[in-house]
Image (cartoon, rainbow, N blue to C red; front, side, top):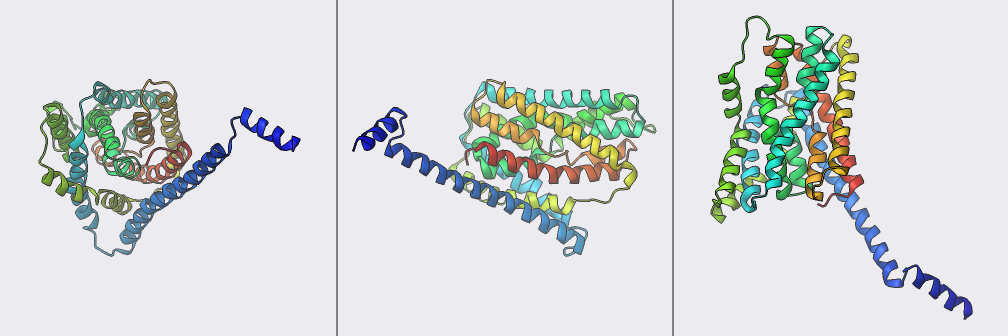
Amino acid sequence: MYYLYSANYILSELDILPENIYYFYNLKQKGNIFMIDVLFKAFSFVAVIVCGYIIKKKGGFGDSALKLVSALALNITLPASVISSFAAFKKDNTIFMLMLLGLGINLAMSFFAFVISRKRSRGIGILYMMNCPGFNIGSFSLPFIQGFIGPSGVVTACMFDTGNALMTCGGNYALTCAAVGSGAGKKFGVKDFAYKLLSSVPFDTYLAALLLAIFNVRLPQPAVNLLSTAAGANGFMAMLMLGLSLDFDISKEYMTEIIKLLILKYGLAAFCAYIIYFKLPLDSLLKSVLTIIVFSPTSALVPAFTQKLDGNVKASGFIASASIVISVAVITIIIAATNFNV
């Protein structure tokens, strides 16, 4: 009897009462369910990407498959996802600061790429300055955030991507031109930059949704319901598009340089994630979304701008494909390890 009383006393002093033991057991069970949920969602995304890649290799839908799926994803499901997520958006000054953060991180990564490649050949300079900065948010990170975090996370990602788009739609190209030259008589002026930016449907959607939110214009609920239906397909369409765009055909001479570049890109991403998650005075939602975003793959527009610069388009295409694979793995690990709210 004495030992029984002693055990109860010790447990009470340590605050390990029966109800607390049950609480921690229940928490562990919830954690296991969370891990299964994370892995299942991540596997679902990967499975769709793999299906897209198999379709591409087998030629199941012909050469026009990527063009068709891209048009549907970028012009219908992505805009629907953005606008429906903004339906309950409330103005917040912190959110608007994310646009500057998206711009600033791109500029910082461009600076590091320039410093590392400035004494190298023009081709290497193009490779680093075009592929190191820039994030594929609209067709990669946004579906992840939509699936794991929800509409509030999508709004945060859109605000960051507004600043990011200024660089991926021409800003990084302009900086690369200034650093290495624009190529054989090719120019890229303010008009070209504005055209590239405003002809981007995702950017126009962000801008329209933001203006609606600023002026407190609310869409009718039936319209939001309709958009939500299309938004539900965004994850599938975006992942299928990524699978159809994968290309791992590259000569061995560039492989060493590509590995170095990817180490630089993801090393800078890890540093940014550390600063965001542990140093910036942001709430947990913003930290979660921004941590996912900085590990996004290279922008899908990079190969087109690389071609305009007379750079190695195949190397850029390979980097875009490799970065998708790396980002899927890294983001899944981050979500599982940090217990983001889903």
